[in-house]
Structures are given as structure tokens and as C-alpha cells.
Length: 389
Image 1: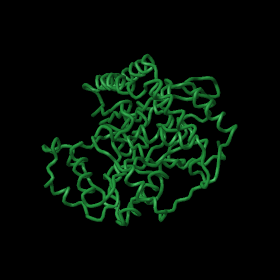
Image 2 (image 1 turned 45 degrees about the horizontal axis):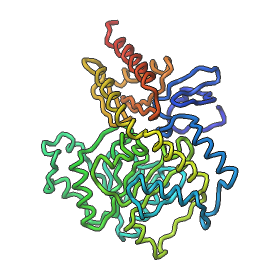
Image 3 (image 1 turned 45 degrees about the vertical axis):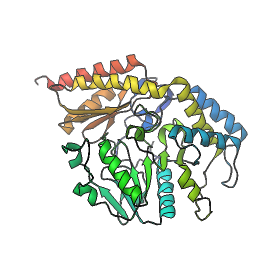
Image 4 (image 1 turned 180 degrees about the vertical axis):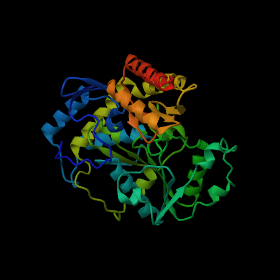
């Protein structure tokens, strides 16, 4: 692996993965690993889904790429499916390659149709890998909601709150990430989000939801914003949309799409509306619908969350957070978290480690017995930490 640039800041835990089957990965020596991160949270159907692989082979054998001045029936059908699950029927859809691109396109559209300059987001939101959204310098307003989580009025969130009064009037878009919180899995109060949405809308701004991580059934609903009772103008979708294939989408509501009909807005990217990416997205949506995976994520997610919370009593875990098949275990001591993560890897379990917080995002297809075995192993490791030296 000496020729591959690793710029993630993380050492390679497994250097030779050669195959995958559902929730499992296989290394070059034939050892199997339960992937409780779903890759980079990208495989709701698990690795190597036959339906997705068949769609890739079928479409690649026909036409994989076409210029952005062309289209095909598969792109139109996939766009309709994306708009349907997002609740934006009658709107428009653009297929791209990554969630970062979808968010950037959404921001550009919002600035164009509103004539406003600034973007609003929550202070802990992760909005992509481009410097424009990671550095958040000029043209950004970050709403710090840390105090809101413990506010006695959080269930209602008073509109006269001083923090809400700090939102400026020139917001083109509120880019709302509904629950990933840069990988720490924190869910802002619904009443707070409702008030922010109302304020931004009343001033002519748009609501762009970043459901790249929290979408495609991850939270037990098609999208994370479904838990907040809001109707966004646009939804950025990625990761799980391709089940490992690099395809993303920006779903645009009817009113915002109509504002683009004049042709004044231009956006061109080499792999915009590729037939192959669209075919993959359609296959993933149809497979998830057929297997009722969103409902499964809600049902099993609640049970799994109960199991994980049962491990936290009196141990080194400070808090367990979760929704659907998205979980975070926050430790009081980062060193303990690191040891637990390493112990799990030694025993064949892949989890995320986000600065003292274990993140668990299994494929929505994971077998219940496999998750139960993981919980048992995690419990043994936690007991080892609690035992006297």
C-alpha cells in the first residue's frame, strides 16, 4: 500500500480487504470482519448486493457515461424515485458523485434564487470535504445549539429566545444536518429546528437538508429530516444512495425548481446525471423498498439501542445516543475508548472511533444474531476495563 496516499490521519487497520458479503468483509487471509461502519456509512444493503451488482453490469453494458447535454430513460426514472422518497414529487433531481458536490450545488442554487449571500448551519455540522464548507469563513453564520440541548424550554423553544434573534437577515440557505453532528450523533431539539426554519423562510431563505449520512433509512425513516416535521426546499443525498458506488443526488422541490426554469443558473460537472450512477441509485431504492429496510431499521434500531444502553450502567460509557441504525457510545475516558476499539478489531468487529466516541452504523440488513454477538463481545471488553488490575 506504499503507493496509495492516506491523508485521513488514521492508520490503516486492515490493509488487504479482498471481498465482502452483506455485513461482512474478508481479508486476504480469509478472515471475516463484521463491518459495523457500513464502509464509510455507505452500504445500507451490505457489501456485494446481487441486485445492485446486476444493475451495474446491465447499465455498464449499455451506456455508463453521457455528456450533461444528454439524458436517458434510466436517469428520468431514477430521478422520479429519488423525488418520491424525499417527498418532493414534481420537483427536479440532479445526480452527482459525492455528498460534498450535492451540498455545494444546493448552496449555489439557494444563493442564485434568493439573491442572498450567507449560509446558516449548526455549529457542529459536517457539510462535506470542500474548503468552502470546512473552513466556514466569510459568508457563514454558525448557530451554536449547545445550550439549547439542556434548555428547560427546549420542548417548545420560545421564538423570543435571544439566540434565535442572532440569526442574520441575509441567509440564503439553512443547511441542516439532522443528527450526524460531525460523527458524534447528536440530535438537535425539533422545536428549535422548526423555529430556525420558520425564521429563515419568513426572510426569503431556503432550507437545504444535508441527509448524506442520515438518509437512506439510516435513522429509521427514509431521511433524517423526517423526524423533524419540516418540508425542505432541497435534500442532499449520498453515501447509502449508491450502496458503495459513488453516486449522490440533489432533490429540489417544485417551487425552487421552477425558479431555475429561466435558464440563468448554470452548473456543469463531468459526471452530472450519469446513466450508470442513476441506475445504481434506482436499484438501491427499489431493493430497500422491496425488503422494507426502512421499517426494519426503525424496529431493530430501537431494540439494538436498548441493548447498547444496557451496557452503559455503571461502566466507562458516559452516554449512548441513537436513532434507527445510527448509534454513538461516548466514553468518559478517551484512552478507554481507544482500547475498546482496538479490542473489538482484534476480535473481528469494525467500529468507528471519533475522539472518545464509538460510532456504530451497521448495514440495515445485518443479522440480529450478529449484532447480539457484537454486544456480548463489547460487554466482555467493558467488564475487563472495570475489573481491578
